Length: 63
Image (cartoon, rainbow, N blue to C red):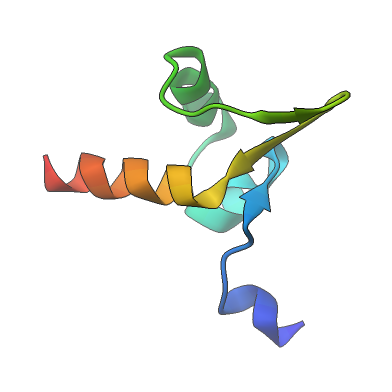
């Protein structure tokens, strides 16, 4: 799938963090526990919005 390397998905799972954003899953857990990112819950499946993550990373990079 050539498109996977060019586009971010709309939502992502916790286990996709290293592949998409290049940092540790435990660091992501810290962000969620601090309330900086909020999951979308479907039963036992938790999805996170990519736009929220990219906005957080942009804000963090500006500081």
